[in-house]
Length: 134
Image (cartoon, rainbow, N blue to C red):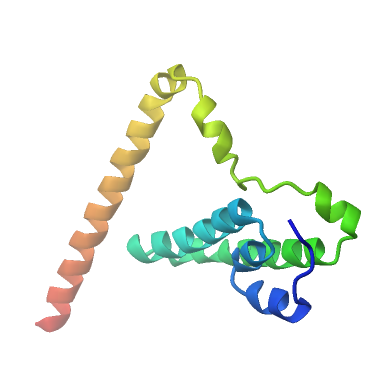
């Protein structure tokens, strides 16, 4: 990776989580930061849980300052930086297959409660909408 990137463009791209990393050549890190940021926005909108949006500034600040630190690191430090996924997706392939069997009950319970919450939320919203119409 070459460090010789525009300071201004690095700053501009770092305003969007992950884009600054991608501009500097850290594609895996940029993709994982951007995915985490927009996935949280999607989940909060899909489940109508605005409280999830309180995590997005943490991701934004981490992405911004990590990109700026990498940009202003010395040439020796920059050459030693590795492009890894933020959430160790490389290690996902090496997961023990028995782990899914061990945790399937917990995952099932979480999925059932998520489904109950969504159904309850939709029923309450539709009933309240009908009450307000009449």
